[in-house]
Image (cartoon, rainbow, N blue to C red; front, side, top):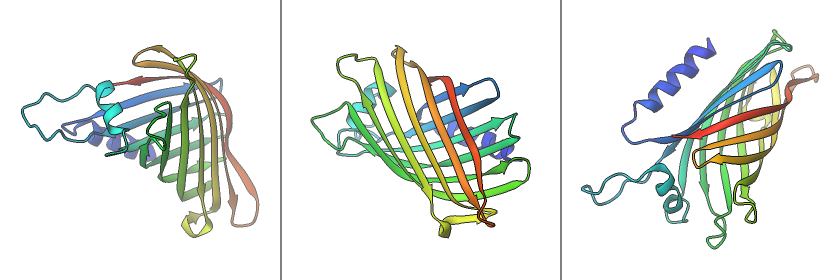
Length: 210
């Protein structure tokens, strides 16, 4: 069922007139994850000016005058643990320090829903934080760290206190294509105080800018 919602969300984003985004896939021997991010771009006041290419628009949007709104949708499947998970949300992104363009920060909210171990249904709304840093001396390498947490008051179904952490090391193969390795951990508490692991994996992946 969640696959249909995920595909519908992606279709809505792709049919928006002005868009730019990233798509990524990561995998290991027993699981894969697909993530799509849609970048809402600031409209130029000059209607006659051609739209900026995504890579040209990003520096202005991150300049601190506008910031950037990012919608995201993700699907995770794990064969070994019988897990299917969908998440989607909105982030506000920008540079905390105008004179340091190598550091970007995000804050937002995410909705998680799915089934773990074939029997545990979870539905959680999490506060999301993420930092992304490009290593200046390498120019092509970057490190990102993310932390999402859903308190009990925003948790429904069988679960509470959902928590996700991710650490990622990425390398720019081309201007629009990155390769990365990431560690991702997602877990939540059940109503009977049992803790269940939704994901605990190292994956290789690729992300592209469109």
